[in-house]
Length: 338
Image (tube, rainbow, N blue to C red; front, side):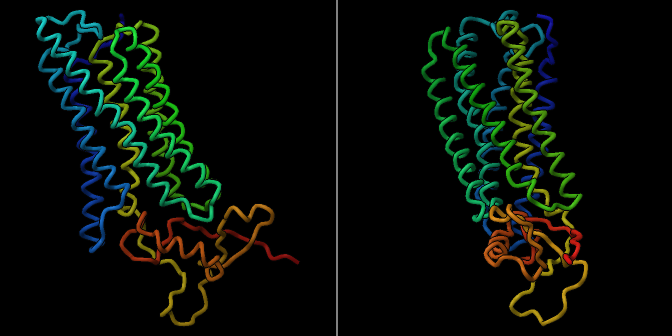
């Protein structure tokens, strides 16, 4: 009962501020894709991000109506204690709550789908085991979403609402952990530039914040039997899916911060010239290289792996066509064997 209540302003301002930030990120990415990289269509992950953003708009629109009706006032609890409305208003609130749950659940899983689709582009085909795990995650996200929707539709009695909350929370939390852990199947095997590492860690720090909000929400609702300020629950929910969308959208900004340097991989029309010293000594780590480390130069990379990085360079491409790899490489020192 002592939980702080943010009130309508404390809910709507951060909610729509995050929506505006994500909108700016998506606009920048779409501009880069269609204007800078001309004659290119949006990728599946980018389309999913736009659909997710629209789903967030639909979910947040209900909060405006809740605020208009006075549900976000500080004295109103989740059991509608403190709500000074008529019977018709209470029925209207119940209908709004029911219909708002559909886009609410969809938003969570669309965020996960956007990230997993991006991972499908980043995980090379030769990483067979990792891609199997990735496809298993795709299957889980689909099953978890359908299970959450079915549980919600079937949760008609009041006693079933608690069951729906716990089931949907568990499915969503596991999905968050899965999407958070998947990149670490490939990151430890990469040689990443310091700037890319910093950006990666900042993104995952936001992911940790998102998971923390999910845990705090569960503990608060379970320890108070659900009797917390209505506006506080709405704020937790909005932060949850908005930060999740922000985490999914942040990788779209990378082309704007990437240094525009050409890779030194030779092309078919390149003249024969010695490789510069700073471009030699790159290491590419694959599933088949665990037994013994292999030293390669920039001109000696496995052709299949190089072909993959060139074909999929538009995942992180900054507009320089196929001279960029999805994987940032750094120089490593290799001592010659006697």
